[in-house]
Image (cartoon, rainbow, N blue to C red; front, side, top):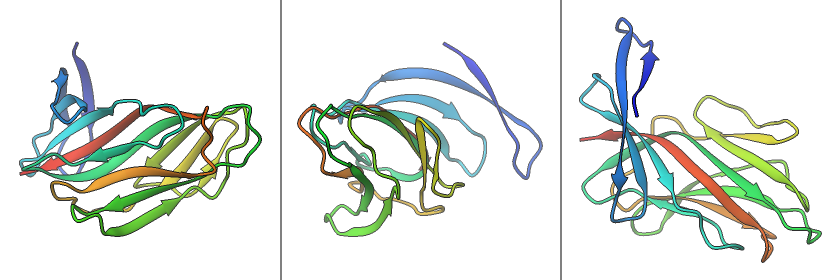
Length: 170
């Protein structure tokens, strides 16, 4: 599969090719986007769906440093009445939490909500989507994690389609 992307930065227009690569041993599948800037690679990481009733976690693989650019996940809630409050935790390899971003709008029963984390956003809500700000310019060394933390997550709730765009630094 090839998709041509245009990226407009300080330099003139850069065209890059997207090619789907196989899944990695740590459970993520990646689509490589080769970008000819600063010797970095932008990649799309597809995080496997966690078991029903649990949150998801993405771990930066050994030997790499990531800068998270954006993530998208879908939370489908069961009919159990509760307001689910969502936060996203950023932790280093020693599990020290150094940042947390919070979706200020809860998700109620029997909903399907897309949650977007983006470095260029403010908290925003539409009928089916929440946009949550993600810290910009932070490099995450190997072993660092980005994870969801859902207060009042119910046994029948399901996180799915978790995808992150990251920049990989050498």
